[in-house]
Amino acid sequence: MRASTGAALAAPAAIVWLAFFALPLARLALEGGDYLATLSQARHLRSLALTTALSAAVTLATLLVAGIAGTFLARQRFAGRSLLVACLTLPLAFPGVVVGGMVIMLAGRQGLIAQASDLLFGERIVFAYSIAGLFLGYVYFSIPRVVLTVMAAAEILDPRLEEAARTLGASNWQVVRDVIVPGLTPAFLAAGAICFATAMGAFGTAFTLATRIEVLPMVIYSEFTLAANFSAAAALSLLLAVVTWAVLFLARSRAGLVSAAA
Amino acid sequence: MRRRGGGFHAALAVTVLAAAFLVLPMLMVILVGVTANWFAGPLAGLSLRWVLQVIDNYGGTILVSLQIALANLAATLLLGVPLAYALACAPGRLARAVEELIVLPVAVPGIATALGMVLAWGTVGGFRSHWSFILAGHVVFTLPFMVRSVLAVLRGQEFRLWDEAARTLGAPFWRRFFTVIVPNARGGILAGSLMVTTLSIGEFNMSLILHTPFTRTLPVGLADAYASLRIEVGSAYTLIFFALIVPLLVAMQVLAARR
Image 1 (tube, rainbow over the protein chains, first blue to last red):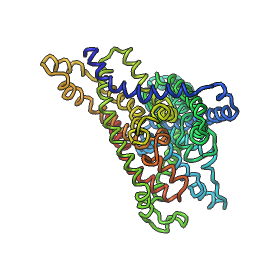
Image 2 (image 1 turned 120 degrees about the horizontal axis):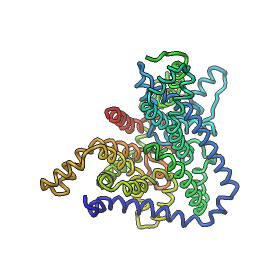
Image 3 (image 1 turned 90 degrees about the vertical axis):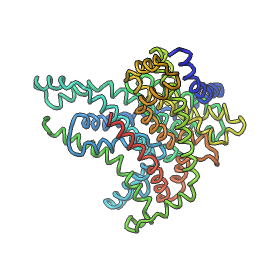
Image 4 (image 1 turned 120 degrees about the vertical axis):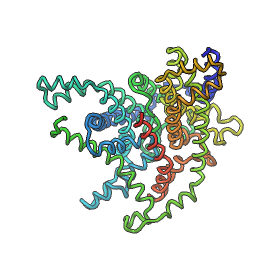
């Protein structure tokens, strides 16, 4: 293909990208104004700390659960396996709002947990609208992504390493600790980065569940719509964009494109 | 065959619990959405009352979302397939740099892009209040999924050889594009189409900022229903959303399993 043909084929996409992505982000950067003043406000710092801590906790919990499930499903063959794979990956592209709905179903006032606890202890346990509910929702939409990444990595793990370890007398636990976990570490890092970045920028679940929990996207939204404080909203958006982009950039060399749609 | 000791059963238990965690609330949504009165329990009987109420009150949001999803599919096909072809032919370093730029809108949170859209385009004519304002956001956000999907298929093939053969036989560029490249990339085009449509129907982060009362999309209406209406209405609304999106998700799983 001649270079001019290639440029002509790429031009329409480039124009759309420039007009509706590059230009808006540039406009956002200009609007940001006094970044230091915005970023040093106590409310914003608290929100940043809360969002980072929540995202880190979600990442660790998801890696533990989905790491076990993904490795297990990739290495074992048994009846019902493909059903489990389907169940664990189906919510992959669920939007954050729907995930918020799922949390309401589980932990809301008329949810499964409230009804079960009412039956068992005569008390309705409700936590959908607290930070615990948000945590549950973020784990919900992170599990499918991490399961897929871990499964893909576990399937190409060299089985000879495990056989060698077993020949040398390693126990099951030693095989997991010394062969499987180190072999999957790159996948865990990549999946963890995607999980963390997605949780940092997630908005739909927080919007559905908790208008009072001040995670960063909620603060941006309220600065923009309620306080009409455009420069603070712009500065915080850019901060969030830089953080999530940097985390994903580090991960992307290892994992493919995984939806950050939540 | 591996021994199935305590490790097997412990890992199986974790996996089954995780699957139940994801699936139980989905089943509950379906049940609540068709229950006459959830407060009285599922034994109170089944009813389509809530589904009909959602269609009455929120039918417009479903139509807006479908309209945007279809337009988004057309736009990402028109923009993405030619771009993927150009990238497949371009030298490695240039292609990687362009890919990096194209993927940026996925890495940047939708709320940031949407704020920029409002600041940059909010005062330009009637654009702000037209549904194509939301479409513009969706196209930028979903385009990388189409491009990556098509590119992956092209890169796994000898398409350059076939293209060259058609060229030496005198086929002009557009003829080659539609009779050599597109048919050979159809697996990637199909997978990309399912993905961009699924993402567009469910997109919320940008749509919440970009929408106006006349261009409210399904997920924006859904958030409103969860917040302010009975659990049956939110569930029935989610049920309608599942009816739109689950066939697409299942088709994606089937397509991925076939590769």
